[in-house]
Image 1 (cartoon, rainbow, N blue to C red):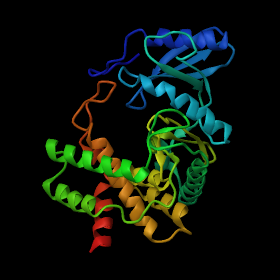
Image 2 (tube, rainbow, N blue to C red):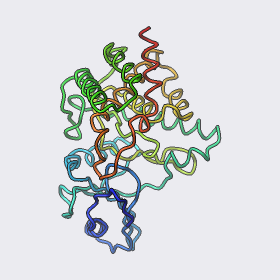
Image 3 (tube, one colour):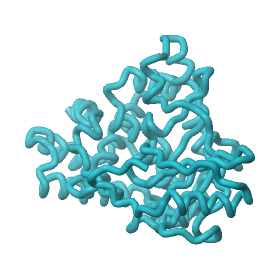
Image 4 (tube, one colour):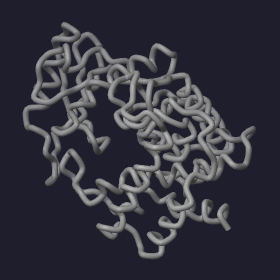
Length: 322
């Protein structure tokens, strides 16, 4: 297993992953290796002699509560026909391990980030349309409450608008306190947050995929979506926020433009401002932790490098207020 200088993974995790898979599948393990993908969990791929190919994701200390929601949420999405990993066990009922975990069958595919440079125009449009379809299907999953999930069916807050308002204010305080952005951009954010949401949420209580990222979309050989992976940061709220989170992370990408066109073709123009508003929300949610190391021990990149779509989102909102 390769480790970085900042890696806080306990050294026995490869053996722990193997033991988990051996007990869950009743198979002989032939390989257990670290997968250096993702920044918030420790991930291992375990293969057995009779063909099982399993991913075991360990949650770092401080994030163990996620095992009470992500495995059940994945199972709920899978039961709805969504292309997500299907858990076969987790640390609540499965074999003991040094950290909380979820285990699921590995889905074959290449990440969207890896595949994008090799797609032609037709394939890019096809993939954007398929991804837009899958994101719309996420709206089938609903919750009681709003904001951060406390289980696969319930969230912490009563009202989405109150959750968003609090998140915006707390994030802006963190941006100011730690000088996380340029003075110019901080001033622009202050004005945008003060003006509030451009429009009330059309719908709430639906699944917001907080982990939307081109690294978390697996692409099949035929340039369609093979799987959406990593659901640890999901929220209950306005489903439009999924596109906003995507804009924050990938706004400058031409593929995001294709995804946006495929997603909002029949939507009113005001939705574009709503997407921008939620791109700001993504930034403000992350800002509270941006001065800290990742849960896995690695230092974080600067906020604007993690979320390069923020500037355009702020510009869109400012134009709407002028």
